[in-house]
Image 1 (cartoon, helix red, strand yellow):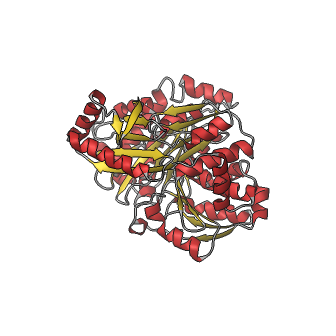
Image 2 (cartoon, helix red, strand yellow):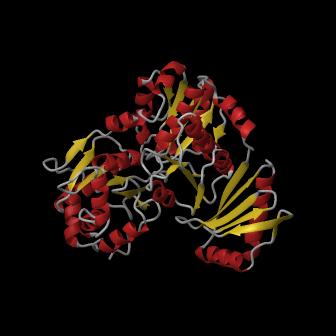
Image 3 (cartoon, one colour):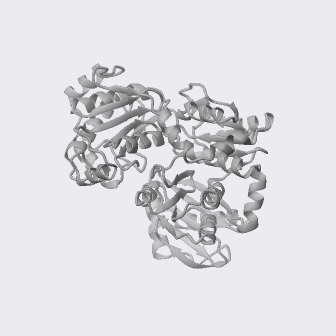
Length: 495
């Protein structure tokens, strides 16, 4: 059983050439191979996978796995190591020809009824961090049960593995591995989800920022095909990501903001390195929070595309989406933090949308996991369909719904301090915050203190880092900052 390779909510990550090496990737691929061949539910002969294939009308004769990589340093070479290890264990491998967005890998898994996919990516981590994501047959990141099964099957380091990984590094077993370009099929599928006729008539000007990541081969080609004028930044290769962290938050999008303003674009769209999260810049240079744009997209899906079903969101995601769901008589489900919980619900086929505040969004008739590419294109689709700029759409939106304001912070703490904070909040929670009584406490994930009047403050530990995260929301623009300030006082009084 492996003690050094552990999955988080977003796969295995470690510093490149330290915890993340050719040897660790090969060992992980061996563990995945054994999982594929032996697991009684998620494996190739497993009841879950077999039922899934039957529902798709397919009968695969051999286990198929897609393997891809992002634009990071050594990602392609490490993907080759994984591919070679898989074929050594009798797995059929289709290797992505170009940098592969995670949602495209997930679409490919569903499209071909593959048993899964390996993507070598660090997502939005700094340039010196990389990782491996395992996508299961249902088209989403592996759940806890799968992760635990793979971890226990990963072999310990050995001289034999070290020798094999060093000799296979930077070379692909071309006689066995099939190389494929997955872009065409994915984009053809996305076309069916959008109003391409409106796009061609819209005369929209869109600025794109792939942040030196995998979206560079998707945004421009798709939009220009449908008559949209495109200007771009960060479309070239740079394994250092321009010296910034490749996430789609406001700090990383200042050059996109400048482009939008300078070229008078209607909208700026961006994805993180492996395209599972998104960010938007309005025509005036304003960064639009996912907490605001996702409810607007839900409204668009329901009113313009006539989708019907349920909606789900994480516990610390804006209640604005609740307003939209209620207005359209849609049942809403709240989940713990982590998109895997939303993916689990999306796989049921009962939900038309799932979202999390950090920029993850999934919709029906697509993959059950978050797709930043599609989220961005849906925002463009929304503008094209309405024939209005985003600023006007926001005004129209808030004529129907109450605007909410949010804020979040992350505070570094030691593991001991984090445990002490959470234990104290459990035993002795505050009964009043910012001079307002606590109406209810939601302990779905950490502690969410719902106050009289509708404002709330959430305090929870990060699942991937030694951080305490705090989130606040209110109809009053000044209240979130005040609630965060009070939250800091609360945890400071404990530690």
